[in-house]
Length: 332
Ligand code: UT7
Image 1 (cartoon, rainbow, N blue to C red):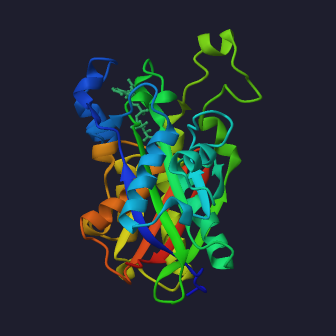
Image 2: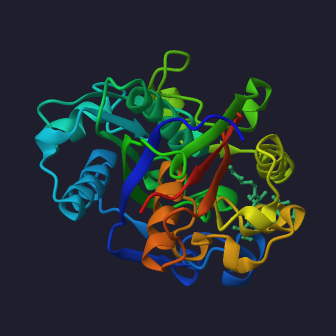
């Protein structure tokens, strides 16, 4: 077993917009069917933010819920890390916007861009500051308004995504029996062209041409990403267990990124674990990118599927490619 990281999750909260969009609703917009979406992805419905509602709004709501649950004032937060691919603007960072909305006057922070693995990356980064002793309370937020970057003329991608946010609080752990035990992350930039948003950055600044070519939307080679994610997510889960001398029997719960139910089930099969040990909420939320993992943790707590001391594995693969896993003992 590796040396614990001296940081633990002490609270989790989520926020999703109230507007539910079903597969039947999408049938009216693109040439698709409820049956195709359900069998290919596992999605039944997702939430859409209203126009004008941005990632900082969803992230702030999740953070406010979390602070209320913890009975904590915003002043008590030292740091805010926001995982997002849909920042309100390219700058300032969404972390700055959330800091201001929360009134977290003593916090500094930044955004982290690692797509669907972003929340896991942000948790690992935040944990380092807590473990070092320099920061006591780090807010890690995953928030995405995917509807701001999906092309409702592209049936292969628009049906997959939803909007949402989740937040966790990281605090110092003084016991080996709780908190983050290990993490592993990697990137494989050769996968970049398979899932990306071509325009809006320094390579293709916004112009009439980029708009007319629909370059400000998500472009995905679905099958390529699928093949990579199916293999890599299962590998990461197995490697994390192996290097800690554990087997899947030791796990109480896996909280995987929610991109496709078939990717989740493939990992589950490789691990040899049944449904009771895997969080699935893609049916209700679709792929919310940075928010899937914290929303999964919230479900785990609300469904009473986690107890103090339980071994939990987080695993995610996303655009980049980015990938990562975190092993922890649940602390509350
Ligand atoms: O979180 C970030 C990482 N992203 C992922 O992990 C996503 C990975 N990819 C996937 O989840 C899957 O590849 C998809 C769900 C995107 C697609 O599933 P697929 O089984 O790979 O389908 P496909 O792309 O091979 O398409 C099969 C057929 C095609 O028709 P033809 O060529 O066989 O006639 C598509 O045109 O399904 C068609 N199709 C649709 N049909 C109805 C594609 N999208 C739709 C749709 N409704 N929405």
